[in-house]
Length: 220
Image (cartoon, rainbow, N blue to C red; front, side):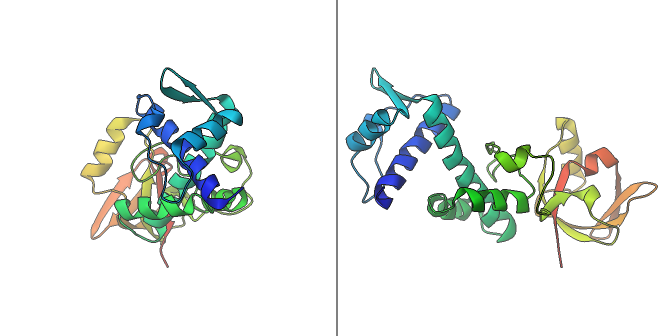
């Protein structure tokens, strides 16, 4: 398939997914395809012929087959956002711009490798869910992730917080009050008998189950 055609089809599927995620309908007549792509009418016709899209009363929705393909596009985009934002330290807006380009060139193998290296992040920098892939569902990880829970690092390790996934929302407020935020650099001071971290000149003791909910990148 021609590159511009493929990017146009993937972009339209992505837009349908995003509209549904926001609780809104997708109306093809309001869609503007990427520059150089086929027309909206051609893209919709192709997606319908391939069994990926249904259109009724001026509104389009994904078929189960289209849902699967759109989910893979969304997954690549949001993982690319994480890659640029967390590892290359780009601003959130810039990471989205870069991700728009990379989502069309990452193949499945590279996507899985990126996800594994990042520690299988559940959300993008904007807080939107990243659809899980096969690597997320496997219990055994073939590649050690770069981003890991705090309790995976040894005492003395210097790390930067990447994302936090608290099971209890009140924990997030407490961590914010302690200065434990994404982007913050800290030192793993000790793990026994209490889990103690150092943020600047301040030492903070946290529960071990909380340490498992804070994901960080080791600093050299």
